[in-house]
Image (cartoon, rainbow, N blue to C red; front, side):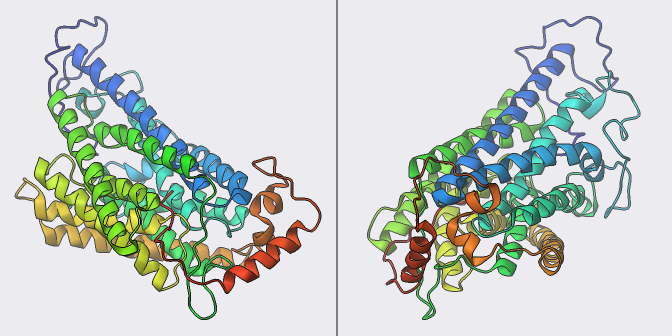
Length: 463
């Protein structure tokens, strides 16, 4: 996702004439410029739709009493993400010339763009400065949205809002500059086409830090160590969210070509779809073999696992390799969900398994399957370690300070009654609670803690 990639010509539109546009010396024809710019704006819209997918998936795979809280968080994340990216994030992520670790082009949009807003010399004439900001801003909020699902149903709203603001504005953007901004990992040859590590693993490491400091939800693990699944409230909504995310990935990966080149974009969309499909099938097979029943939540997880896995190398691996990457990701996500449950790390939507586990796999897979001989497994592993160390430590520090100051977790009473009522004073649905509702919820939670372990793998997919 570097800005200065060369832009290939589009034969279908090369004959279009747009008089009055002064193109830069190295730029493409006016028709190609227009096609590229329109395609990138369309992809920005598709990535924006992913936030609706995250919101509906997370709401569907958690309990109804927390739905308003989840929708509020997702609304806040995309809004604060765009604003902070405009204020400082864009210029932290793409600072121009810097020492490879940290740079800053200035406050506000246009600060790092001396040529002016009306020239089309930007990105080798491929598209405008404003289109680039819009597309990149849609990515920025995604990392914090991943965290939202993992810490759902027990985190204080105000604490999460503070975390999300800092994480999107500083942590994601500084880390992103190391590769996409031309920093030291880019110079080493580390490759991440559309963000298996830079977006998904970054969000996954942040999610892991938050979950470790928060602890599991009430009733999730009994005192004797047995696990009690907490089923989601709306599987149709969850499935809808996954398919919205799959649709959005056409923009996420397709836009990362950074042009409307017909061969490159269509190839990326094919590898993306094949990996998602392979991930679904392998996750279905793996979970069915273990639980003896077909598990919808694992099928949905598998789709997302395949999408995350292919994102790092969608443009540089072959067709068969894309199927293998997605298939392995589908198996990995099933094993990862089981593993985290066994060590009592409670992730209501499986975000850590989908984004962290499969993000790492997808990044390493570039070093194994890439058709570019310059891509090295050692370099890819070095990048994974650098991003993991920085992001996890940063997220742990932010969550730790919040826990020691304003507090991180809601009270037991608030968690039992639901964050919709406790944090927002309202319900997402017209649910008649009636007198004694809290007492009934408390008794149900106590009973759940001593419930027998379920045979199903039903752990909800990521958000």
